[in-house]
Every structure is written in structure tokens, then in C-alpha cells.
Image (cartoon, rainbow, N blue to C red; front, side):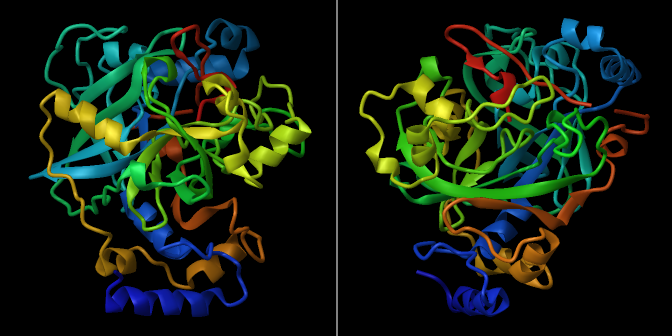
Length: 411
């Protein structure tokens, strides 16, 4: 049941929205309220830009032959969500493919950017487990349940927990129950897109260097749920959405603002935006399903590959918690509903009306839409992750049987 303050915030949100059709009728919280939660709990994750990595980025940017030889890419910013705090240590739930083995093995420092625009360095990333994962490894800030190989396969479960230290108070996401998310219900995905992975619609060419980034909130209906297993690297919630590359690891919230999963895959037949990808379109029947017209009418024999062709997908929080428990990582998770204070703290002046105007839209589609948050942005991602150095670009993969093919659907 909503508190009195939440009800007041809901009414105020409705006033601010005016004629905007921004909130599905069945939603427990408004889009603005969920975005407030997402704004405070979503983080941006990326390797620190060492001089060697900067040089490699430049070589790949300017030399097509170098890019062909390095198909797994160069630099891979991703997303995550704060799920626990113990003293000064914060724990972020994300996906394993945000941590390529080449960076883990070299103990490359990573950075985690929180909503106050601070970047927290993570220096001990190497768990000495290799890829495929073996043994118990050594204590590290990164706990992986799968790994991303040098040729960009994901082996094991595409789930990871990474921690950082801070004296500051950051919001911790409220955990929900993925089993309670029903077919047809809307889920909300937050993360940090990487526009360099996309084609420029005006030129039809790779965008090149794009330093400025904005966090994105996307939403759409759940189409299918399956049990997580080794064959699907853990992916088990499928939905229609408007996510973009770079949002991998970002939180998936239910309509009450509770964390139910981590986004990790865009649909295989979504219009390709990748620099090396050729445009593909869905068949008429697939397009009808992907639009959310009748997700419950999916063919009974549609397998995992068929689902990933049509829908985006995420890990589910229930399974992630089970894996975390198995390794003996006892964390004080937050199972309370998002508080009115939390929701209020993250709301920006002007609310959804200001967001709609900044997004160049009059209204948002209640079934499936998205926006870049004008109040949550990075002016120069290269400067932010240089850790005092200079900078530049990104990556994506391909796999094989028994592993996740990240390739152009990597997000």
C-alpha cells in the first residue's frame, strides 16, 4: 500500500504530466517515480583508460584493418545497479560480459560512476579464475558467475557482482520477486547507452567519438519467461523495449519500482544500429509479437534462439540471489518497497513535462517507449574514466554453441 506521501507525489506527478500519456494504467508507480529510483541506483561501469588502451582505441578508430583483427572491440562501457551496502562497501549487480577476460586478467582498474557524478575506482578486479572460470580464485572486488572470453563468448551465467568503497550515502535498490512479474506487465530498464556503437542516421556511417552520454529509461511489456540455465547463460525474462547498446547490466524494475532483473541482450532482429551491421527487419508476424500486441500468443514451440531474435532479455534477480548465496556472499539486501523519501530525492524540477520537452516528444507511448534523462548525463565519458589520463571508444562480440553470442545484440 502506498504511503500518504507517495499518494501526494503521484497526484503531483499527474498534474505535471498534464496531457502526457506517460504512465500505463496498471503501473504501481508513475514513469517519473520509477525514473527517480533508476537515476539514484543505476551506475555506469567501464575500464579505466590506460595509455596502452588509449593507443589501441585510436588504432582501431583510424585503422579498419586493426578493427578487423580485434573483433571483440576495444572499450566496453556498461551499466549496473546498487543492490547492497556493508559499511563503506557498496555492491553492484551487473552482467559478466561487462568484464572481458583481457581486462580482468591484466587487473585493469575499473571505474563505477554513481548518480552524484563521482567515479569510484576499483583496483583489485582480477580474481585469478581465468575463463572458463576455474577454482575459487582470490579475493577481489569482482565476483563472476560467468566470464567473457577473448573471442567474446560468454561462458557460464552472465551475472556478476562488483563492489566499490565510499563514505557517501547512496540509494540501494529495493529487490522484488521476478516470479510475480506476469506476461503483459510493463518492466522498466535503466542504463547508459553507448552511441558510438550506432550508425549516424544522417550520414549512415559510424558516429566516431561521442564523449557526451545520457542515461536512458526504456519500458515495454513482458512477452515470455523461462527458467535460467546453462544453455541460455541465465537469460530468462523477455520483453519488448527500446534499449540501446551500453545498457547491459542495468536494472530492470517492475511497476512498483522493485528490481526484478538485469538487462543484457537486445533482440537479434531489432533494427541494427551497429557500425558493421546491415539493417534487418522482422517478419509481419514477428513485428506484431515484438510490438507487444499480444505477447501471450507466442507460439508454444518458440525456443530460446527464437525468443532472442524477437525480444530483448534480462537475467532475473531471484536466480542472481541464489548464485550469490551459493558462494557465501551474505549481503544485507533491501526487500522493503521504495520509500517516498527515495522517490522524492531523485525527482527533478519540471518532472516528466521537462523530460518530454528535452526528449523532443509531446508524449510517451504507454506500451513501449524510452527517453534519455536530461538530468543524468556525462559531459565527457573519456575524461571521466581517464583517471587523470587522456582518452577514446567501445566493443562488442560473437560466440559459439553453449555460449551467449553478444555480437550486434550486445547491449
